[in-house]
Structure formats: structure tokens, C-alpha cells
Length: 410
Image (cartoon, rainbow, N blue to C red):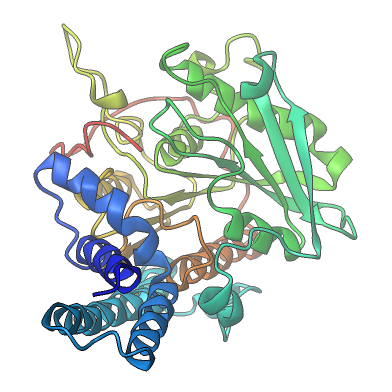
């Protein structure tokens, strides 16, 4: 039995199990589900190619004569079948996104948005080079300082090479449980896609645990918004059309930015800066108490649920049903609170089979989410919806039963 055939079969089968079944309880198993299943859940086609090629090569070399080898070949076939199911879930994510847009924006949303869902996703990248992180028509301006915290206060800007002016802006915050991560890791397909369409996209680092704690991360996020307001025009940005976005812990930051415009608690020393936004795009967010902590005394408020009060800016939420870090129940609770609070525009795309960190690759799932986010932002901008009023006084209220997210954000 050739080890060169057995090893990829065992690894692929193991990872496919966690991508396909994705157990979310107990917590340790949920973490294993993410660790082993996340990559193959987004790039199953590559695993199919690998197993098919390995099996064909083993047959051609006559390596499948033993009973163990035949068992391994049977496992490979079953694994490929499981990978096909995983791939199908990702491919059909466009249905979930399309339905979310219809529910959140109305049946006629296509008539009120200049950007619609792409007729064809970039299948060349999805099928063969999903890890590619650049586009020839987009330039990345690296390591621009927005604060005094060294490399943790640096940002990157993405814009089209012909540098269009008066461009809408997307500010993005990375995930990492407030204790890790960096600005160049996640959501690159979203940033480069929007930049290629004439946006200025900003991806920012922020200070992390254990050096700092809440609300220091949030203060940094507000500093990025204030920096774009002051300096964005030099890069072709129109700060009056500004969206915030983030993944996991970064979605927590972006959600709080959207719900706390000009809140002095999060703007020490720059209270006069306008930090209101046009909308928010939140990807597999952590929605719960800060880092799962419950210190002595009254428990801290849920974030960002505890800051929902009345009217909010338009918000797009995408979350996977198999998320083992920030639970889908937490996302549903957050969306329900937003909708109960007032006549708010909320788009909620629940992605079947989606796991945490679905935005790392050019996967079929994330490209569908990118399309939905672009269409949502276009609908907001083309509907002549102004930035959420800066005159709103910040406030906090919690409505309805509490369904916190995972105890620690990712």
C-alpha cells in the first residue's frame, strides 16, 4: 500500500468530514471543525482534483491490488462525493444572497441599484486559483499611519490604477478575537472587487489584547473613520459615502461604528470628528459580550446588540450556518433586534454550510457574498440615502431575549 496515496486520502477524508458535518458542540469539537474544515469548505474543487489525480495515478501504477488499497480507494470515492456536496452548498450560496436582498431591500431592488448581481462569478479564479489576492487593475497603497500606536495603527488603501475621484469608501476591520490578525489577511476578494469598480477601500490594523482592552479597539476603529473624513480626498475618496465592514471581531467593531455615530465615549480627544457612516457590511460577526467576559457586577452589554436603538444605518449581515466561533444564533438575534428597533434596512444572508473565515479565498460562497454586498451598497447609494444623521444622540438599549454569540470571537 503506497503511503503516497494513503496519506492524501486520509487527510482529505478527515477534513471533508469536518467541512460536511461541522459539529458545533461541544466547543472543542466546534473549534476542530473550523480548524480542519475551513479551507476545504471553501476550496473543495482543489481537493477533488487532488484525490482524482492521486487515484488515477495509483490505478495506472497498479498500486490498488491489496485489500487496504482498495479500501483507501473506496474512501477516496466517498470523500469526493462528500466534497461534491460541500461544493454544491458553496455554489448555491447565490440563492441565499439573492433571497436576502429581496427580503431586505424589496422585490424591486434591482430597479433601484446600478450594481446588480454579476451574471457570472469569476469561475476561473474559483476553480483554479482561489488563493490569488491581487488584480492587475487595482493598486494597494501600504502602511499609511492613522494614529500613534505604531504598526497597530497602520492601514492599507486599495483603489483602481486610474485613480478615479469622488469614490465611495469601504473601511474594513480584520478578525482575530481582538488578540490577533492583520489588515492583509481576510476579505481581499471584496476589497479588490470594489476597488476595481471605482471604490477606495481601506483595511486597517487596530490595537489588540492583551496590551489593550475594550474600548481601545473601538477607539481605533473610530480613528480610522475620522482619518478617512480628513484625508480620504487625497486618495480620491468621497467621505460622504462611507461604509464600514469587518469579519468576526472586525464585524463587531464595524457594527459598533455603525450604531454609535459621534459617540464621545469612543472618540476621546477627537470628539468633534464626524464618525457617522452610510451603511455596514458584517461578515461572520461575533455578537456577544466582549471576549466572553462576565466580570463581577452587572454583566457588560452585548456588542453590538446592546447599542441598537431606533433608526440605524442600512446593514448587510452574512453568516454561515456551520460557524463554530461566532454562532449563527447570535447573528439571528442581532438581526432580529435591528428589525424590531425601527424601520431599518437590514439584509441578512444565512449561508448554508458556511463556516467561520469564509472570506479568505475566491470561493463560490464568498464571491456570491461579494456580489450581494456590492448590490446592497449600490442600492444604498443610488437611493440617495444620506449618511446616518450625525445629530442623533448616541444611546444604548437591549430589546428582547439575549442569545449571545460564542464565548470568544474569532
